[in-house]
Image (tube, rainbow, N blue to C red; front, side):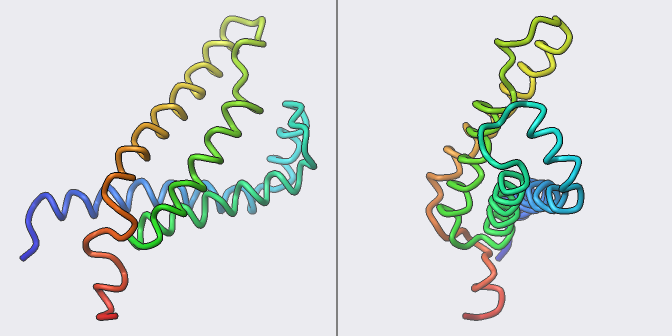
Amino acid sequence: MVEVVDVVFIIGRLIFGGYRVLNGLNHFINMKMMADFTRQRGVPFPAELSVAVTGLMMLLGGLTIILGVYTYIGMALIILFLLSAMIFVHRFWEMSDPMARMMEMILFMGNAAYIGVLLMLYTLGDTWPFNVFDLIGG
């Protein structure tokens, strides 16, 4: 029997995983703009490759959250993406403009909060209730 807490968990998975999937797709849809931004931020890796790799990390990570399987891999991919963004993109401590510094600090701290949530989700195990395999009977 499906309980309210199960429905809430599934909705949360769809929202969070869907956000990451859309974010990953955005990297591919807006590759040139994202690569230009990456170069502007001085990321020390080839821009197009960085955008493609991080887009794939989010896409796959989001799918594992939605599907409820291989979540350890997906969460690790999302955490690696968030850490890389914190280190290479949202370097608020380097900003001299107070508004830019505040915006980058907000983005940096938001990524840190996402990492905290993912670490909590890690305690649920690698396969979650109501996962895709359960739903298809596999």
